[in-house]
Image 1: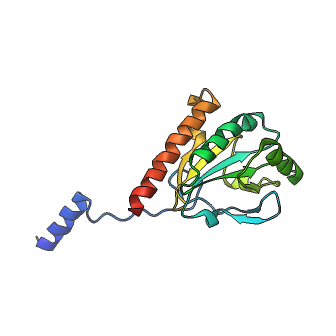
Image 2 (image 1 turned 90 degrees about the vertical axis):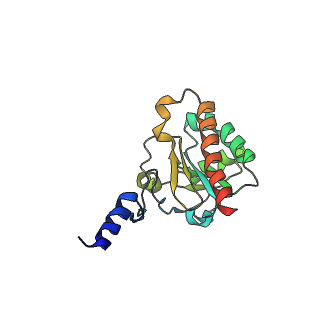
Image 3 (image 1 turned 180 degrees about the horizontal axis):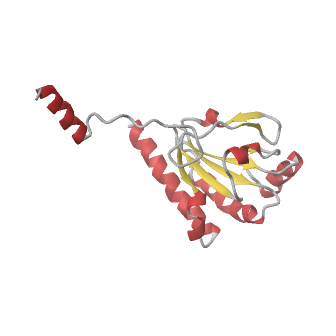
Length: 180
């Protein structure tokens, strides 16, 4: 048998000639996050891709959602904790009336921007089944965590915030290591 076939066979077995993984756009962990284009509460156009290079925590919420309101203090804490790092918290608001979004941001002192999804198209594209929902995206735009996968194990919003803190830190640690 020809020796070059042996070499190719050995390389394949060793994993050296492995095909690179092809990333696809989707809403599952490991997918490239779909683009979001929408207005914020002020009518300013926003795009998710403008935050490429930062770790993004997407928080799907609505002003009428009691659990979303309960999560807000923990989100504020996360935003403050990771301030100055390549991290951003972005909301995706499901209120039909944009004025409800504006009022909620003022009432609850939300300092981060929110995409307004009054028609629900972003929620449908991202397969959001309940609120609140948290999705963590790395600096390259790849989904690294979705709170949907752990909600049965979460006993409180503090548990969820603690889990998110660990996940954010894990992704940020990789960003810092890769930049060195």
